Image (tube, rainbow, N blue to C red; front, side):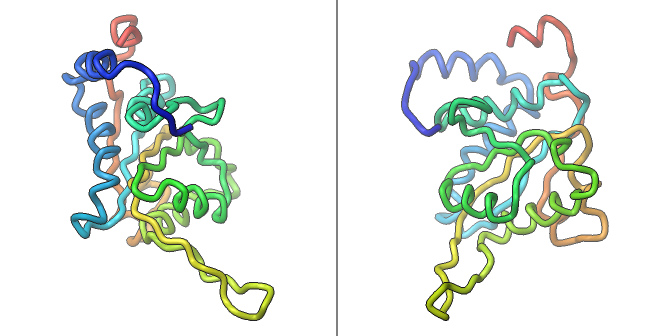
Length: 189
């Protein structure tokens, strides 16, 4: 999913087309913040796009991913699903150390597994995987990372984390329609 392709001037023109939409631009800025976290000694954090279906949330994630590589959900793209395991999230973070982690659609997490959202926010924000034993009787290497989680779903992420201050404090929720309205004009952007 990480590759160099396309035309820089065309990408800049596309970014210029979204410049008047602050919620959309915030996703791009959060993406660019990921490699700066270590340099600045700043903590990992989560930017979440919460709003109605077909409102442009996944498009925001694709725009943020486009600076890094393939902005798709398929074909080895950088957009991953919230439908993950803790180990899968750890490995994705370690692989993308210094880059954003993009998780689309919290609705993909089954109702009986909603605590997974809270746990993954805390895990990703913490920047360190779980300590595990190895077959030789010692401990395996523990992955660490610096990243920004950029996420989407139909509800605010903080709602999924009520009662868990550690996850709530690490999350910035952007709610509403990112392109300020849903019509053919914004579809073309």
